[in-house]
Image 1: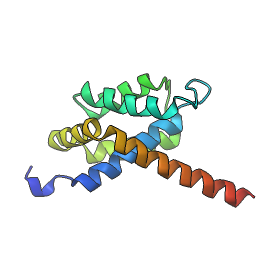
Image 2 (image 1 turned 90 degrees about the horizontal axis):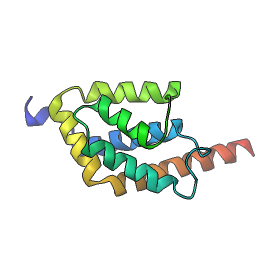
Image 3 (image 1 turned 45 degrees about the vertical axis):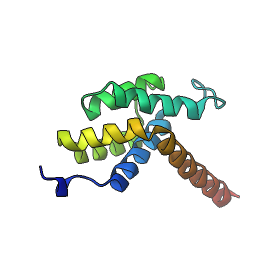
Length: 126
């Protein structure tokens, strides 16, 4: 695979926020305290990135760290789509490296996205 076909850092960052968002959509505040929610998310992303050789391993390790027993249907669809984009070992390595290096930033972006979506949902229900 040539470097021109690899995903850019912006595309990888978007995939990473989609990945973390999908994980958190299947996590539970009954299991993870809201007080530690974002630290656990960051830690799961870092741990999964450091210890994985494939996207499937990374998703499983992150899920274990977040105490997710099963992914929701919506999360599963998102994870499958991300997996399709990271099938090439070089693409996964770039993704894994970005997640490890930028876990704090990816977690912050994901938090902003989820907060905005929740506020919009609340506003639409009022």
